[in-house]
Length: 70
Image 1 (cartoon, rainbow, N blue to C red):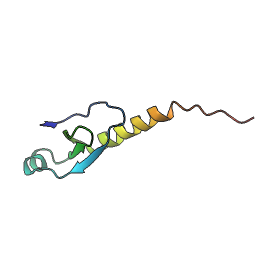
Image 2: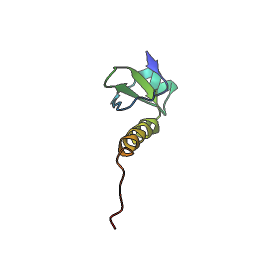
Image 3: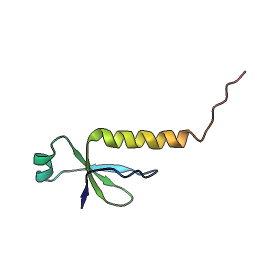
Image 4: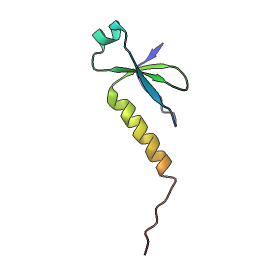
């Protein structure tokens, strides 16, 4: 089963996989990624993976408060 949206999961990692011919013809601007933890396939635009990774990094970084040195 192929999903057309990413689910918001913390720490999720994706690997790009080859698209079948039908995906290339019908969805030429989307790329296929496989979730490394669940094995589910996602056919999404490339920016969605990047945005998901940025959100995960920001959520991990927000737990560390930086203090100004006076």
